[in-house]
Image (cartoon, rainbow, N blue to C red; front, side, top):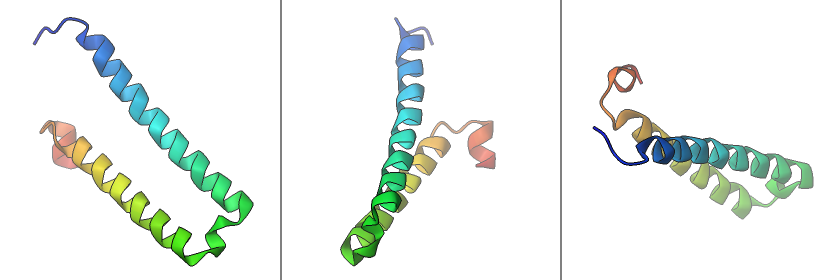
Length: 72
């Protein structure tokens, strides 16, 4: 399929997804540094959000139905 500037959209999407996970890990590191994990509500919300992000990443990985999706 030929789409105008499809390569640009694909690379922006891939780099944006990588940047999103870098931001997630930086956020977790900041929370560990400042001791935010001591608050139970913060911990619970963080775990729920992490699980949602992991589920979304898995679905995005499996959705294309390619060979990598089959083994994922």
